[in-house]
Length: 394
Image (cartoon, rainbow, N blue to C red; front, top):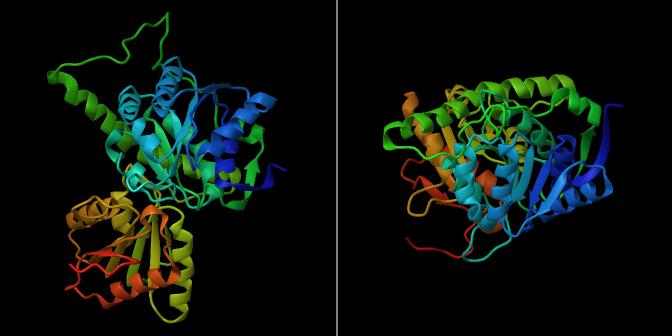
């Protein structure tokens, strides 16, 4: 058998995916809800099932700094974080992308303080979209494991050489147990070769790394970063196709649609809420409502072309945002709305802010969103807060 079934959490799935990817160094600092990932990897390093150095550093900032050092000598690096820890790493994120270090990092999506919360929304990673990292959002534990393996192949591609963030909804995925197919090591080795790069410290081929620059050529460096993320689009599609051919599981590349062929109203989502929306779509379809869902898998690179192709016939579009850019709207909505504005077609579009601080998004909430879209009342505020426990008069 090329795979084994394991009943594991999303965190365990990430750790297994990392082990199968054969990193050289794990730089670790624990933070809820990510802690289990680095605990499992420390156990694997201790019992010998993972041949890697395990560095328990003093902070998230140090974890990212260490990962950059590892990548700078041409080795494969992994780290993990969440919420305030991701923010503490923020300085290093820009260094890592600017240095073209293909680090893979898991982020357990969690709300940002204040108020202090250990529960999950997507404010942390979406707040760092401009850091130059590729960002993927997974739906379940199986996708989490598979995406760690794919992430290394994408990030390390010579046309990309860009760090990669795998995002899991905190607790909903990190701590929930599911049946996951875990590939055999020899099959993963066939898919993911050892890491090789010219972007490293080398006595035989000295190069300047981590350099300063002047205003006259800074733009050119930043354009190269931008070009690499844009070039990753085709690499992502190719890697996903190759993975499906080898393992029998593909994820559609940058987006994944469900029952949208004749849909009149569609919800656009990220991450684990996709499964609940699919259940509601099936129920409403049975009641005669033409609804569907589009899962955005990658926020960077943003799938503008793919999204517009799928949405060109849709009358009403809603975007669920588990974040808010205070004083404006949700970040995902901003991106989707911008893409549609450039396209020339004009669907009815709304932004639903929900799930902040881990608040439950129920099936009735989702059905209500669909009904709002089907009604198409253009007098309604385009930004709706869903599931408010206290009535707010505006």
